[in-house]
Image (spheres, rainbow, N blue to C red):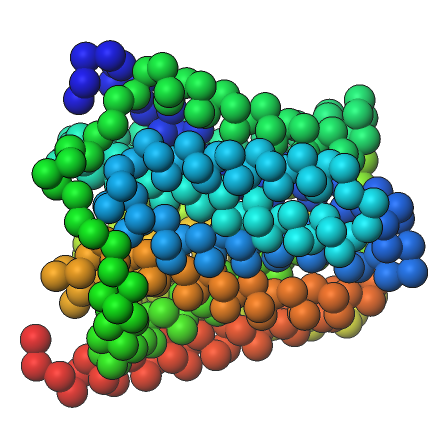
Length: 402
């Protein structure tokens, strides 16, 4: 690594780049009621699209940012992405209609894909083997704190500057990244190691991946798991507010759940070598089917408000925990046969699964009717479909020689 930056400072900068996505999503959660009341008073549920529109843009950006950075270098892509992110944040801040805010959020997601995706490529440029794994682990450990504190940070900004102030905080966040990187982190990809951007190669990679049954199934299951996570994120604030009347304490409960579910990666790391990735995913989905079915049954009984709230917090934690166990394993399953096109495959997998998951979560989120029905039934349906696909994957693998 270049002498200009220490390893500790490098990890902190990378963790901040990773955090762009979580901060851009989770800090918006406390703002949804105010945005809905001001920009969509006839249908406040539409404010949830603030989240899925960003995810949609991020998914599209993920498809291109990695390969483009391979062609032109890491710094130009991060700077360009941050500039797009800042411009879109300014447009959203000044918007007087929900439609314009949503369009700005899509563009903001496109920009955010730059720092998030290219940060991993920078690590690959500068480190390898166990040292690379250690750097990623430390950065991700710092990153896991962001979902816990982002809603509280968003609520604090809203208290002082209203919901538009959150977009100003996004601008400040991106400026810190580009100034910090601009002065402290040199270009990590030497010109002789760059590869031209060729769209036909990406199209060919998509065809090859979907022709492979295990990869294809893994992408579909990852889409459904991300769909469950995004559906929970879009509905969680209205559930706390409308059903449980705890809007004021929502950021603290969300932070608590995020910290609790963050242990999923530790459990997975300790068990996956002995159990295997496919079984870990299958078991996690089976457990979530049982838990969600139990939540549906108990909510049909006459629970006290306190018991109903405790049950939801527990269930929310299990959904986040399930996502933490499944996502990395599914990505690894899909990547395993694609070693010869690993970088392109990572972009394709991330892009397709994210875009499709946003397309699933958005309409389900709009079904919120003041009860847990749409949320629980939506997540149970996605979980059952994902479980069925994993069982089918196991049958295919049993028929194919190693």
